[in-house]
Length: 471
Image 1 (spheres, helix red, strand yellow):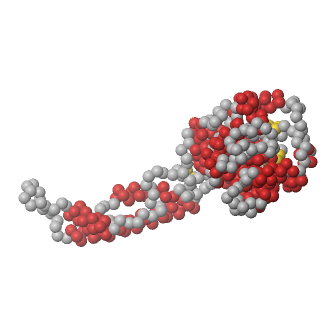
Image 2 (cartoon, one colour):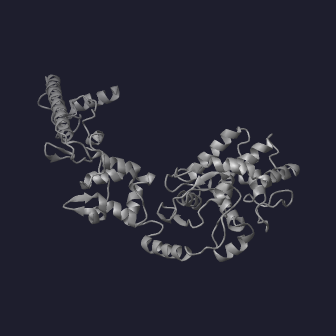
Image 3 (cartoon, rainbow, N blue to C red):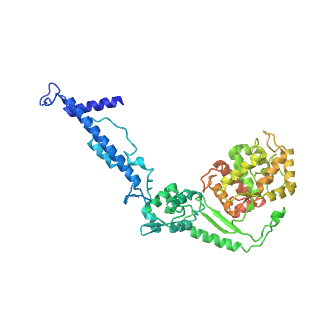
C-alpha cells in the first residue's frame, strides 16, 4: 500500500508539473511554473477529495431510493431493473474524472453492480426461443410448462429436482401457491435453480426423446398381458396368501428421471428376494467386490433358490438364499442388530430416491414363524464355515436380518427408481445421491443377468437379455 501511494504521488508530481528536462537534449524547455507547483497539487487533492465524498454520498442516496422503490415485478419506480455486467455509471464517471493524484479509496459494495445481485438475482442465459411455446401476451403460462414436462416423461410436482424451482415460483405469489403466469425474466430466475437439467429438458435431450411413442408401446404390452391368469400367489404366510391375484401394475423410470406408471403400480409389496440385490451392492461398496467373493461365488447354481448346496465351499452366487445369509454376516458386523437394519433401510431409501418405502411388521412376524428353511440354511452355512470369519456373529441375528430385509415394502414406482439407480451406475437419477459404487453396481448387474432368475436364468437371458431378479 505504501509503495502504491508513493508511486501515485510521484506520478502526480510528474503529470502536474510536466516531465523534467533531461540535460543535453535539444528542443526541451523547462516548465514555465516550477515554483508553487506542490501547493497546486495539494489544492487539487483537496478539491478532488471533496468531489469523491459528494459522489459517494449521491451513490448511497440513490441506492436507498432504489431499495425503497423496489417492487414485486423487479422494477424500481416503474423502471425495470436489469443486472449490468460491468461497473455502475457512477463508477465509470469517477474513473473518467479521476487523476493520478488522488489517494486510492476503498471500493464499497455499491461501486460495482455485480456486487449487488443479492437484491435482484441475475437472469440465467436461456434462449428465449425455448420459451415461445409457453408464452401468451409476453407472459409465461405455467400450466403449459407443466404440461410440456409431463409430455416428455417428467413429473415436476413430485420430482426432487424441481423442488427448488416450484418453491421459487410459489414465492412470486402472495398466497404462496403456484402462479398462473410469470414474467419471462422471473421464470428464468426460477429455472436457474437447476439450469443444466432444465435446458436439457427444454431442448428435448433426454434418454428417450420420443416419450409418447415409447409409452404407447408399453401400454399396448401392458394391456396384452393383463388377461394372463397363469400362476398363483405365494402361500407361505397369511399376508402373502391374501394378495389380490388380479393386481397388475407397471412402472418405468429412466436414467434421466422420465417416469411412466400404469395399473396398480402404487400398491406396496414386500421386497423378499429383491433385498439381496441391494445387500450385495452395500457390502461390495463398503468392503470390496474381492472381499465379498472370497465368501460367495459368481455363477448360477442351476437349482432352486433355497437349495442347500455349495460349490468349492462357497454359495454359488449372492442372489440365492445361501448367498443372502452370507452377505448378512459380512454387512457391518460391528453394529448391533437394530443399527444394521437401520443402515440397510437408509440405503434402500437412497436407491429409491426416498420414494414410498415402508415396513410390514405383521409379515415380519409371520415370516419368523414360517422360515424353517432359512434357519436350516443358516446352520448349514455355519457348519461349512461359509460365514464371516473375521468377526464374531450371532447366527439368529443374521437369519432374522434376512427376515427383516424381506419385509421392507416398496411399490412398482419406487422399485423402478431402484432399477434406474442400478442402470445409472449407483447414482439415483432423481436425487443425484450416490447409493453404491459403480464397480459394485456393474458386478451386481452381471450377476442379475446370469443368476437373477434362478434355474430360469439361462433362458431368460437368451430371450430377454436384460438383468433381472425374480421375487
